[in-house]
Length: 437
Ligand SMILES: Cc1cc2nc3c(=O)[nH]c(=O)nc-3n(C[C@H](O)[C@H](O)[C@H](O)COP(=O)(O)OP(=O)(O)OC[C@H]3O[C@@H](n4cnc5c(N)ncnc54)[C@H](O)[C@@H]3O)c2cc1C
Image 1 (cartoon, rainbow, N blue to C red):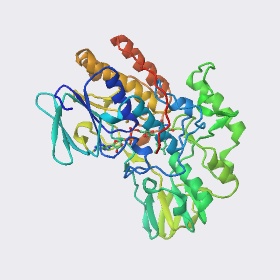
Image 2 (cartoon, protein in one colour):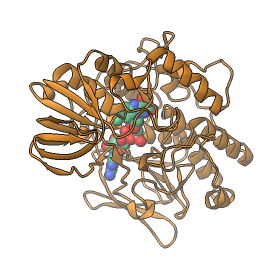
Image 3 (cartoon, rainbow, N blue to C red):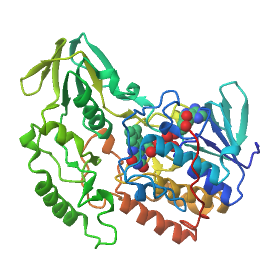
Image 4 (cartoon, rainbow, N blue to C red):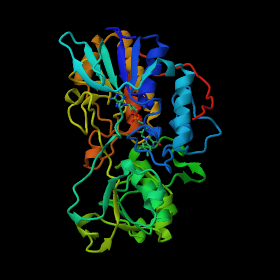
């Protein structure tokens, strides 16, 4: 369907599916375009360009990670594998009858704003359609961020985006650069498979285990008292020191920030492998020379492969000129373009919890905005610039500019929605049905 009053949703990963469900449940017309042949976004390892690797599991736990009204099934483990997440997403799309409404194999080439405020969406084959609104859900993990490597390294250099399986590391001396969640996972693969494995990180991090007291770590505050952030930092920081000891003993740099002031690194295995000598930690790279890498502490080592686990640029090729800054599009509540009415994005929020509930909340806001008309909301889009840090002083790095605390974000969105008379939830529940992948 294409009609000038409808909303065009681009991308059928988790974000696009959440938006489609919110529009569908209110019978709001929409067009849904996806360049791949199936739903699932990056969780479909066969979606060309996906950064998924075979050892990947969720880092947010099962009960904290599903969409509202559609919990992940009980038989899933605490941290589902990428294949299980894909099965869940496909089951979600089928349960809400979203799959049949998606035009697959349709790559959007360009989005253009028209003089009358409508939007023209042009496909790869040149065909264009006009829509009242566009919601860009094209994902933010497709365009690798590759820093400059000083010197003349003669070994192989890759970004983890193109890494699939630990077989690629066998018989190699491997240096993983970066200690985010993917970096740590892949460093653990290197610890198991490579001839020699090193992880380099410029700053120290707090490594949070996936389980504490036998429970997924992100469920610990469920039902307990909600502590102010500063107290949570103290209590949880002390607990981590008791459980894990001093990470500096393992050659890791001391964190230069307090707990929760960088994106959480949730990994139980890196410390395990460091303790067993399967991998070594080094500081940042000072320079390279042939196959030798010199580190900032004056030590050096030889490698066949450098794997950059250095994150992504949040590029939005279909509409970059409207989104502005590649790393931090200026979107109200990480959703609504402040400058271009009718342009939204879901999937660009940087925060410290599972993403899908937030995508849901954002999708509800969009559906209410579409249903209600933009008038009353426009002033907020232009003027409301809430502090959503919950008092956390996020470190000064590209990733953490615009970073929000998920609790503060949810609280603010609910306050705004209530003031507007908009619902924040209320989706009909559906049941998980196993999908054959
Ligand atoms: C290793 C890893 C672990 C993670 N773990 C968690 C976790 O534990 N919990 C969590 O909540 N999040 C996690 N994430 C975050 C992850 O980003 C989200 O889970 C989610 O996949 C983002 O969804 P999305 O829909 O925004 O983007 P994507 O999944 O990237 O989907 C975007 C879709 O848009 C399509 N598309 C792109 N461009 C076009 C175009 N021009 N035309 C048409 N279609 C287009 C793509 O084909 C794709 O299907 C993890 C990410 C990684 C990499």
